[in-house]
Image (spheres, rainbow, N blue to C red):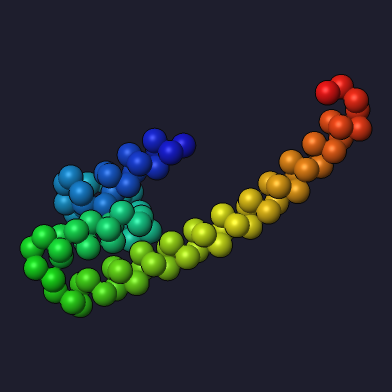
Length: 96
């Protein structure tokens, strides 16, 4: 799954070829991929900062990072509950 997401991001963010000449699927996916904004920040850092391009990309990347951390915490809490349930059942069984 991680490799699939990596390939989609590299192809759909304009990192290799302009998105405009790619398939329509990549044009639709482009604004939803975090790497789009990372590439914008890299281009701005290399070629000179144009603040109206830099600030929105930075804000969107920070928002994606915050959302990712929150979702990760929620998923981990749920996974920990499930893991503890199975650990308790395993201890009760006396197999180990």
